[in-house]
Length: 339
Image (tube, rainbow, N blue to C red; front, side, top):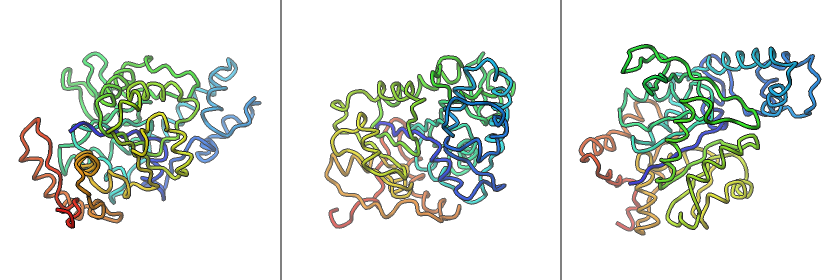
Protein backbone atom coordinates (compact mmCIF):
# COMPACT_ATOMS: atom_id res chain seq x y z
CA UNK A 1 0.00 0.00 0.00
CA UNK A 2 1.17 3.54 -0.71
CA UNK A 3 2.32 5.79 2.18
CA UNK A 4 0.32 7.99 4.49
CA UNK A 5 1.99 11.40 4.91
CA UNK A 6 1.15 13.59 7.91
CA UNK A 7 1.96 17.32 7.96
CA UNK A 8 2.17 18.85 11.46
CA UNK A 9 1.81 22.46 12.53
CA UNK A 10 1.68 24.23 15.88
CA UNK A 11 -1.88 23.06 16.51
CA UNK A 12 -0.66 19.47 16.80
CA UNK A 13 1.75 20.33 19.61
CA UNK A 14 -0.95 22.36 21.38
CA UNK A 15 -3.25 19.32 21.19
CA UNK A 16 -0.45 17.17 22.60
CA UNK A 17 0.11 19.28 25.71
CA UNK A 18 -3.20 21.15 26.17
CA UNK A 19 -2.53 21.56 29.89
CA UNK A 20 1.18 22.19 29.52
CA UNK A 21 4.16 19.87 29.39
CA UNK A 22 5.66 17.86 32.26
CA UNK A 23 6.72 21.13 33.93
CA UNK A 24 3.60 23.14 33.10
CA UNK A 25 5.16 24.96 30.14
CA UNK A 26 2.94 25.50 27.12
CA UNK A 27 3.33 25.78 23.40
CA UNK A 28 1.42 28.24 21.25
CA UNK A 29 0.52 29.31 17.76
CA UNK A 30 2.45 32.26 16.35
CA UNK A 31 -0.20 34.85 17.27
CA UNK A 32 0.74 36.41 20.59
CA UNK A 33 3.63 33.97 21.04
CA UNK A 34 6.16 36.54 22.28
CA UNK A 35 3.82 37.69 25.04
CA UNK A 36 2.81 34.16 26.02
CA UNK A 37 6.47 33.18 26.39
CA UNK A 38 7.37 36.45 28.18
CA UNK A 39 9.68 37.38 25.31
CA UNK A 40 7.93 40.65 24.47
CA UNK A 41 10.35 42.42 26.82
CA UNK A 42 13.00 41.99 24.11
CA UNK A 43 11.17 44.33 21.73
CA UNK A 44 9.50 46.69 24.21
CA UNK A 45 11.92 49.53 23.34
CA UNK A 46 11.77 48.92 19.59
CA UNK A 47 9.37 50.96 17.45
CA UNK A 48 7.91 48.35 15.14
CA UNK A 49 6.22 49.21 11.87
CA UNK A 50 3.92 46.20 12.14
CA UNK A 51 0.89 46.27 14.43
CA UNK A 52 0.69 42.47 14.34
CA UNK A 53 1.30 40.34 17.43
CA UNK A 54 2.25 37.40 15.20
CA UNK A 55 5.83 36.23 15.71
CA UNK A 56 6.29 35.73 11.97
CA UNK A 57 5.45 39.37 11.22
CA UNK A 58 7.54 40.72 14.09
CA UNK A 59 10.54 38.49 13.42
CA UNK A 60 10.47 39.23 9.68
CA UNK A 61 10.66 42.97 10.37
CA UNK A 62 13.41 42.63 12.97
CA UNK A 63 15.40 40.37 10.66
CA UNK A 64 15.37 42.99 7.90
CA UNK A 65 16.48 45.86 10.16
CA UNK A 66 20.19 46.49 10.61
CA UNK A 67 19.57 48.10 14.01
CA UNK A 68 18.07 44.87 15.40
CA UNK A 69 20.82 42.31 14.76
CA UNK A 70 21.58 41.75 18.45
CA UNK A 71 17.89 41.54 19.35
CA UNK A 72 17.30 38.95 16.61
CA UNK A 73 20.19 36.85 17.91
CA UNK A 74 18.90 37.02 21.49
CA UNK A 75 15.35 36.24 20.36
CA UNK A 76 16.54 33.19 18.44
CA UNK A 77 18.55 31.96 21.43
CA UNK A 78 15.59 32.32 23.79
CA UNK A 79 13.15 30.67 21.40
CA UNK A 80 15.53 27.74 20.93
CA UNK A 81 16.05 27.38 24.67
CA UNK A 82 12.32 27.59 25.47
CA UNK A 83 11.10 25.11 22.87
CA UNK A 84 14.04 22.82 23.57
CA UNK A 85 13.03 22.63 27.24
CA UNK A 86 9.56 21.17 26.59
CA UNK A 87 9.02 17.62 27.89
CA UNK A 88 6.20 15.16 27.37
CA UNK A 89 4.11 14.14 30.39
CA UNK A 90 4.42 10.50 31.45
CA UNK A 91 0.96 9.54 30.21
CA UNK A 92 0.28 8.80 26.53
CA UNK A 93 -0.20 11.96 24.47
CA UNK A 94 -1.54 12.72 21.00
CA UNK A 95 1.99 12.50 19.62
CA UNK A 96 2.38 8.99 21.04
CA UNK A 97 -0.89 7.92 19.44
CA UNK A 98 0.17 9.58 16.19
CA UNK A 99 3.55 7.86 16.03
CA UNK A 100 1.98 4.48 16.82
CA UNK A 101 -0.78 5.01 14.23
CA UNK A 102 1.73 4.81 11.37
CA UNK A 103 4.33 2.32 10.11
CA UNK A 104 7.71 2.47 8.41
CA UNK A 105 6.23 3.11 4.97
CA UNK A 106 4.72 6.36 6.28
CA UNK A 107 6.13 9.82 6.99
CA UNK A 108 5.51 12.59 9.51
CA UNK A 109 6.72 15.98 8.29
CA UNK A 110 6.65 18.61 11.00
CA UNK A 111 7.06 22.39 10.90
CA UNK A 112 7.40 22.50 14.70
CA UNK A 113 10.61 23.32 16.55
CA UNK A 114 9.73 21.58 19.80
CA UNK A 115 11.20 18.15 20.70
CA UNK A 116 7.93 16.48 21.75
CA UNK A 117 7.43 14.44 18.57
CA UNK A 118 10.99 13.09 18.80
CA UNK A 119 10.46 12.25 22.48
CA UNK A 120 7.27 10.38 21.56
CA UNK A 121 9.10 8.46 18.83
CA UNK A 122 11.85 7.38 21.23
CA UNK A 123 9.47 6.01 23.86
CA UNK A 124 7.14 4.42 21.28
CA UNK A 125 10.13 2.59 19.79
CA UNK A 126 10.10 0.50 22.98
CA UNK A 127 6.74 -0.89 21.84
CA UNK A 128 7.66 -1.50 18.19
CA UNK A 129 10.44 -0.65 15.79
CA UNK A 130 7.99 -0.43 12.90
CA UNK A 131 7.47 3.32 13.09
CA UNK A 132 7.20 6.17 10.56
CA UNK A 133 10.03 8.33 9.31
CA UNK A 134 10.15 11.85 10.74
CA UNK A 135 11.41 14.93 8.89
CA UNK A 136 11.65 18.37 10.50
CA UNK A 137 11.01 20.92 7.77
CA UNK A 138 11.99 23.94 9.88
CA UNK A 139 14.63 22.17 11.97
CA UNK A 140 14.06 20.86 15.48
CA UNK A 141 15.60 21.36 18.90
CA UNK A 142 15.86 17.57 19.40
CA UNK A 143 17.24 16.64 15.98
CA UNK A 144 20.92 16.29 15.10
CA UNK A 145 22.58 15.88 11.72
CA UNK A 146 26.01 14.77 10.54
CA UNK A 147 26.53 16.76 7.36
CA UNK A 148 29.68 14.87 6.38
CA UNK A 149 27.95 11.47 6.31
CA UNK A 150 24.35 12.62 5.67
CA UNK A 151 23.05 10.85 8.78
CA UNK A 152 20.56 12.20 11.30
CA UNK A 153 18.98 11.24 14.60
CA UNK A 154 18.13 12.54 18.05
CA UNK A 155 20.71 14.74 19.77
CA UNK A 156 21.63 12.01 22.24
CA UNK A 157 22.52 9.62 19.40
CA UNK A 158 25.73 9.16 17.40
CA UNK A 159 26.45 9.19 13.71
CA UNK A 160 26.72 5.50 12.70
CA UNK A 161 29.64 6.29 10.36
CA UNK A 162 31.99 8.56 12.32
CA UNK A 163 30.56 7.66 15.76
CA UNK A 164 30.50 11.33 16.77
CA UNK A 165 27.48 12.74 18.58
CA UNK A 166 25.09 14.45 16.17
CA UNK A 167 25.50 18.25 16.03
CA UNK A 168 22.16 20.09 16.48
CA UNK A 169 20.22 21.21 13.43
CA UNK A 170 19.57 24.96 13.16
CA UNK A 171 16.01 26.26 13.27
CA UNK A 172 14.48 27.94 10.25
CA UNK A 173 12.99 31.10 11.69
CA UNK A 174 9.87 32.77 10.25
CA UNK A 175 11.17 35.23 7.67
CA UNK A 176 8.90 35.95 4.72
CA UNK A 177 11.36 34.57 2.18
CA UNK A 178 12.52 31.26 3.62
CA UNK A 179 15.47 29.51 1.99
CA UNK A 180 14.82 25.78 2.22
CA UNK A 181 18.22 25.06 0.69
CA UNK A 182 20.26 27.07 3.21
CA UNK A 183 20.81 24.06 5.49
CA UNK A 184 21.69 20.59 4.24
CA UNK A 185 19.43 18.75 6.69
CA UNK A 186 16.40 20.90 5.90
CA UNK A 187 17.10 20.68 2.16
CA UNK A 188 17.29 16.88 2.23
CA UNK A 189 14.22 16.65 4.47
CA UNK A 190 12.21 18.58 1.91
CA UNK A 191 13.54 16.45 -0.93
CA UNK A 192 12.54 13.27 0.90
CA UNK A 193 9.09 14.56 1.87
CA UNK A 194 8.33 15.76 -1.65
CA UNK A 195 9.24 12.36 -3.03
CA UNK A 196 7.05 10.50 -0.52
CA UNK A 197 4.08 12.86 -1.01
CA UNK A 198 4.25 12.32 -4.75
CA UNK A 199 3.78 8.57 -4.26
CA UNK A 200 1.38 8.73 -1.30
CA UNK A 201 -2.22 7.55 -1.01
CA UNK A 202 -3.26 9.69 1.94
CA UNK A 203 -2.33 13.14 3.15
CA UNK A 204 -3.24 14.32 6.66
CA UNK A 205 -2.80 17.94 7.69
CA UNK A 206 -2.81 18.29 11.48
CA UNK A 207 -2.90 21.71 13.11
CA UNK A 208 -1.06 23.45 10.29
CA UNK A 209 -2.48 26.88 9.46
CA UNK A 210 -0.53 27.43 6.21
CA UNK A 211 0.55 30.98 7.19
CA UNK A 212 1.34 33.59 4.53
CA UNK A 213 5.03 33.40 5.41
CA UNK A 214 4.99 29.73 4.33
CA UNK A 215 3.94 30.35 0.73
CA UNK A 216 7.08 28.65 -0.52
CA UNK A 217 6.36 25.61 1.64
CA UNK A 218 2.77 25.32 0.40
CA UNK A 219 4.03 25.61 -3.16
CA UNK A 220 6.49 22.75 -2.60
CA UNK A 221 3.80 20.56 -1.03
CA UNK A 222 1.40 21.30 -3.89
CA UNK A 223 4.03 20.52 -6.51
CA UNK A 224 4.62 17.15 -4.85
CA UNK A 225 0.90 16.35 -4.53
CA UNK A 226 0.27 17.38 -8.14
CA UNK A 227 -2.99 18.08 -9.91
CA UNK A 228 -6.15 17.03 -8.07
CA UNK A 229 -7.37 15.58 -11.37
CA UNK A 230 -4.67 12.97 -10.92
CA UNK A 231 -5.72 12.35 -7.29
CA UNK A 232 -9.19 10.92 -7.86
CA UNK A 233 -8.63 7.92 -5.57
CA UNK A 234 -6.51 9.54 -2.87
CA UNK A 235 -7.84 10.94 0.38
CA UNK A 236 -7.04 14.13 2.31
CA UNK A 237 -7.67 14.30 6.03
CA UNK A 238 -7.56 17.52 8.06
CA UNK A 239 -7.43 17.70 11.86
CA UNK A 240 -8.08 21.25 12.97
CA UNK A 241 -10.39 23.37 15.13
CA UNK A 242 -11.17 25.78 12.27
CA UNK A 243 -14.52 25.53 10.50
CA UNK A 244 -14.93 23.05 7.67
CA UNK A 245 -15.80 25.85 5.24
CA UNK A 246 -12.57 27.69 6.02
CA UNK A 247 -10.43 24.56 5.84
CA UNK A 248 -11.87 23.34 2.54
CA UNK A 249 -11.23 26.77 1.03
CA UNK A 250 -7.68 26.84 2.38
CA UNK A 251 -6.78 23.36 1.09
CA UNK A 252 -9.00 23.18 -2.00
CA UNK A 253 -6.02 22.73 -4.33
CA UNK A 254 -5.25 19.44 -2.56
CA UNK A 255 -8.79 17.99 -2.41
CA UNK A 256 -10.51 16.15 -5.22
CA UNK A 257 -14.30 16.44 -5.03
CA UNK A 258 -15.60 14.94 -1.77
CA UNK A 259 -12.46 12.90 -1.00
CA UNK A 260 -11.71 14.45 2.36
CA UNK A 261 -12.43 14.08 6.06
CA UNK A 262 -12.30 17.03 8.45
CA UNK A 263 -12.33 16.46 12.21
CA UNK A 264 -11.46 18.67 15.17
CA UNK A 265 -9.66 15.94 17.11
CA UNK A 266 -7.19 13.15 16.42
CA UNK A 267 -9.34 10.25 17.63
CA UNK A 268 -12.07 10.86 15.04
CA UNK A 269 -9.56 11.08 12.18
CA UNK A 270 -8.54 8.16 9.96
CA UNK A 271 -5.36 7.84 12.03
CA UNK A 272 -7.28 7.54 15.27
CA UNK A 273 -10.00 5.28 13.89
CA UNK A 274 -7.72 2.94 11.91
CA UNK A 275 -4.23 3.12 13.45
CA UNK A 276 -1.47 1.38 11.48
CA UNK A 277 -4.00 0.46 8.75
CA UNK A 278 -5.38 3.86 7.72
CA UNK A 279 -4.53 3.52 4.02
CA UNK A 280 -5.64 -0.12 3.86
CA UNK A 281 -8.97 0.52 5.58
CA UNK A 282 -9.82 3.69 3.65
CA UNK A 283 -8.95 1.98 0.35
CA UNK A 284 -11.15 -0.99 1.32
CA UNK A 285 -14.02 1.35 2.14
CA UNK A 286 -13.99 3.61 -0.91
CA UNK A 287 -12.42 1.44 -3.62
CA UNK A 288 -13.54 -2.08 -2.63
CA UNK A 289 -16.94 -1.12 -1.17
CA UNK A 290 -16.16 -2.78 2.17
CA UNK A 291 -17.58 -0.48 4.91
CA UNK A 292 -15.43 -0.11 7.99
CA UNK A 293 -16.26 0.45 11.63
CA UNK A 294 -14.39 3.47 12.98
CA UNK A 295 -15.37 2.83 16.60
CA UNK A 296 -12.64 0.26 17.22
CA UNK A 297 -9.57 2.49 17.06
CA UNK A 298 -7.54 4.42 19.61
CA UNK A 299 -9.53 5.99 22.44
CA UNK A 300 -8.77 9.09 24.44
CA UNK A 301 -7.61 8.21 27.94
CA UNK A 302 -5.98 4.90 27.00
CA UNK A 303 -3.12 3.91 29.31
CA UNK A 304 0.16 2.50 28.05
CA UNK A 305 -1.08 -0.98 28.92
CA UNK A 306 -4.32 -0.36 27.02
CA UNK A 307 -2.32 0.72 23.98
CA UNK A 308 -0.04 -2.30 24.07
CA UNK A 309 -3.00 -4.65 24.38
CA UNK A 310 -4.80 -2.91 21.52
CA UNK A 311 -1.75 -3.12 19.24
CA UNK A 312 -0.93 -6.74 20.03
CA UNK A 313 -2.67 -8.36 17.04
CA UNK A 314 -1.73 -5.58 14.64
CA UNK A 315 1.96 -5.91 15.49
CA UNK A 316 1.77 -9.70 15.26
CA UNK A 317 0.28 -9.46 11.78
CA UNK A 318 3.08 -7.12 10.77
CA UNK A 319 5.74 -9.52 12.00
CA UNK A 320 4.15 -12.30 9.97
CA UNK A 321 3.86 -10.27 6.77
CA UNK A 322 6.54 -10.87 4.16
CA UNK A 323 8.76 -7.91 3.41
CA UNK A 324 7.39 -5.89 0.52
CA UNK A 325 3.84 -7.21 0.98
CA UNK A 326 0.87 -5.17 2.12
CA UNK A 327 -0.21 -5.56 5.72
CA UNK A 328 -3.58 -7.29 5.99
CA UNK A 329 -6.51 -5.03 6.88
CA UNK A 330 -7.46 -5.48 10.51
CA UNK A 331 -10.82 -7.30 10.80
CA UNK A 332 -12.26 -5.48 13.86
CA UNK A 333 -12.31 -2.32 11.69
CA UNK A 334 -14.77 -3.86 9.22
CA UNK A 335 -18.51 -3.43 9.60
CA UNK A 336 -19.54 -6.96 10.61
CA UNK A 337 -23.03 -6.44 9.17
CA UNK A 338 -21.64 -6.67 5.64
CA UNK A 339 -18.93 -9.34 5.99
